[in-house]
Image 1 (spheres, helix red, strand yellow):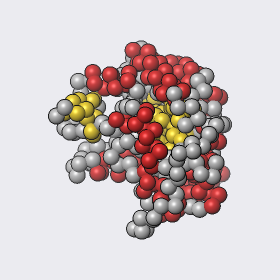
Image 2: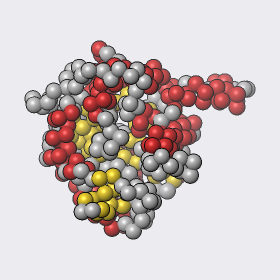
Image 3: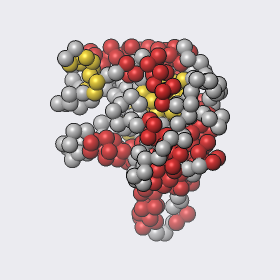
Image 4: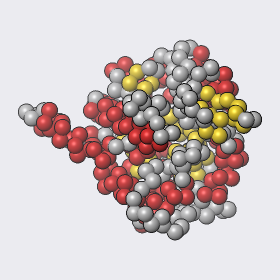
Length: 351
């Protein structure tokens, strides 16, 4: 396992999801611009050019080989099915998940999939969890910062979190629209990607933790995208705010790792200093390597370099592969034609 590099945050859009996005009249949608497909997430957005890696597994595998990524857990990116409410989303989720599983079956022991939930009733989401857990190629579920229209800490989702813990299917929380979009407009998508998205995750996961969801559902495992947003950096401030809020009962005030023993984050921070902070706050056993490929913000080689700069020895192996193997229950077969990039030249910017 020492040479394995597992990307747990790598996106791909199966055919049914592409058809759905092409059929939407408002963003997010896929449109042809100058003869090429572009993925437009926001109103007025010219969109991201959809290279073959967005939809084609062979192109994804070629990218992985070139980048030194030995294995990947693939998932669709936003908007998932969050904008497709009602019973129709149940069948669409079933179709998308079947296509994702087929992709994983076509590259056994090299890629696995995270499925999607319908945007209907909580009961339908729980049923979909059971279906996904029964598929050996599907090792997790990707969600936004709401499920079936409910914020993650809503009491209505109590049975969902209990079911996710019972079937031991990790839930990957990914931002979708960004927090405070009015305040983060301008400068292209720079503020959205760097601030609005991470802060959306920060607030949603913080509420999940403070609501006691991890205590009520022992065994629940949640992965927070993009290093958990600002949560590791602000964990001390959050704890102190709770101390000030509840001066008479300090027994309920505990650290973030203590309150959320099943909380993991990915490594997509583009800074070895920030990555070290995540590891210091949560522990190296709760950080997973990711790239955000194939979106333009992704820097797969740089992310591998950052990881090697941030942690070494057994800690590097944990983040690069071992944590993903244990969390998702992966069985690795090391490809013989892939070289790991961990020994690449450091960036040298110290950020």
